[in-house]
Image 1 (tube, rainbow, N blue to C red):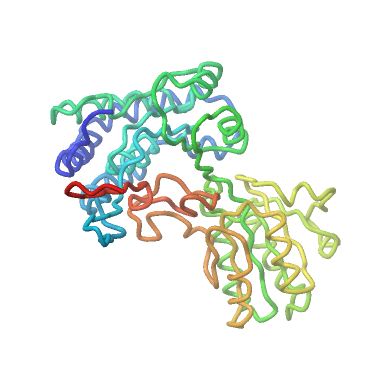
Image 2 (tube, rainbow, N blue to C red):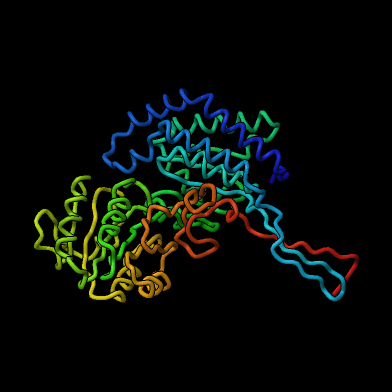
Length: 398
């Protein structure tokens, strides 16, 4: 591995990247237009993630500037101990080494996720999807310009222009040392990577998030949260897919009818369990597989539960381990729910759309992990590190 870049070098590269993105904005937008016109699929979430506009460019630039202002995540002392024989033992944060990020359709990953990995002192291999190739190649060229401008090796950021067969071969027998793989995409991509990888994989991105409306919920608050979590960005992994409603919710039928009216304003297709199957304008659930499904689409399931315990059990059985929320004024019920639901993020009276590194104060994220090792939920700059033991002696033997 190349000698680690010092913090000043890493920060200046990030700030130069921010400048270059603005300077080459028209080139990036033109390349993205080619990608959008070439995409012939009907996946609306894919198209949403693929598109680069002024807001996404602003987001890339802001992410890079924020990263440059963050403290160095490396060399932070986590533990110190002095042995009785005089040896000084310390544990400090250290880079993983080389991180491969495999992702679908999102050109902004080429900046935001790679930026976090770079600031953490890692070499980065990027394998984007073919649908975003033109956009990604422009951004990779900017990475190389920024590195070259500060006399840093261009191989700190490398783009792998592989097809599926070549990617599989690389995963199974890498031509260079790989320390960590982060797949960013749908379940098929994640399963493909886990099947063929020969190094640790951080599983990122599967949502299938639930909201439970407790009997003591503020109904207007519940309405606002559901509409926000479902309709503001259907391509996001923190979007809402399932709503569980307490059987003893006051004015339940009135609430559900009003909720359906609001959802239909955004053309959300509503599936219901047996409790709500008689409602007009809904589709009855035919089998339980839909409960496991992450939609990434204008679809939602409304179901009824007889108790808080049943709601928790249902979320733990069907949910993706990402985010879950309870809407209630009952603090005890909220605490039981938040302690018992097995997701990376749990909410009381708030939208699941906040599960995001930037919103959680991390200054961005590499991924949102639904694994429990080594970090759960949004993985920010301070999490994308491993550790190393430093042992300082003056001749001690054991």
